[in-house]
Image (tube, rainbow, N blue to C red; front, side):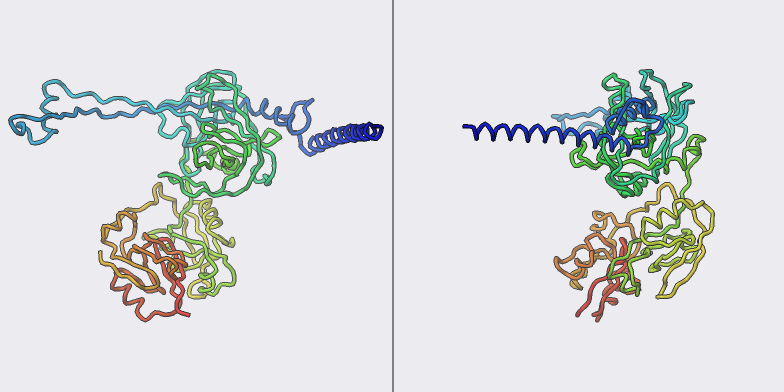
Length: 501
């Protein structure tokens, strides 16, 4: 019995000591975090640790966050629909439209109905005179914009400037001495750094002026989402965070623990439409470059070469005699583009642009985009294994760089798992091809050299081993007796299709 009591006492003592050590450890952790955080102007005296910093950020930067409600009116045509069966055969009207016009002449046309679309988003005040930074997609097409401030006031807003490509806009309300958020440095962000996402998606829906706050870390930097939707938005340099960014938070700020805006919340990655732990924000430094122009209502200009490009893989790099996969391969040069006028050709590998090395597509696009329109840039290319230096005058990126579709017949099958058709068959419509010449890939055999190379149905073959392929006859002539590796240029770029071993 004594042994049992002794054991129980020992167990209790160990528990008490463990609890004391644990509490001491937590205090040490809290103190360490408090010292690690560089408190800025937004941190109020008396707060401590990460929790205190977040509370202070919410109270400070949160005052500059607004809710944005938009209204867009569309006219929907209302039509009469007539369904009748005459016992005397067809009525004395050639079709239903004639009958509708006859009916309207006597009773008047049904007026169009106004359909109102409502939208909600967020924004952040960047100037005490009432300038608010938000996403372009938040206010796109809006006829009426209403802003709800954190103090509950509702004010009408007007668009001062907007830019679809960067998905940024500046709107303005008539007010003075408003609370303003401090714009920080997004270039200083580090993966794992604590950030706070602030927005006010429910400011109008729930009649609550207070913004919502979510907390997380910077999960990744320089993330690319590519082209989304029908607009030419450039989501190629985003901050990824696990701080919840829900619908309606778009346009709100992503803030560091010093209360500085480091990003503008823009999107979530979701399979359900709700938050799944992956959100994205536009780096604030990207916004700072164009805010002055947006406020002035100026169009934001972006540099443009007029080429379709692709990154190198190991096979293609080896084909061109390159030791590393560094550079960008030109797979297409648009007619009358700056690139064509400057001497660039399909098959060129761009190694440098404006005296800066180019390792991949992302680097080239960024360098060209930020180049001043009309300026001249030296472009170093590798052509036929020889290095050339060309001079290209950077053009202005068109508002809609997409081209038109085409149509197309005649099927050729067999070579390395490819089945192709003339580019004027009905199949071309389904594949939405955009070429004027070439042959359409309609099928790729599983496990074939073509599939292993990456070719897919819908590709348009334009060249094989630098020989033009304008039609099935060119295709058959080019592949005849071809046994070595084949460099195939398609509408998507270059692919190396392995030959016989």
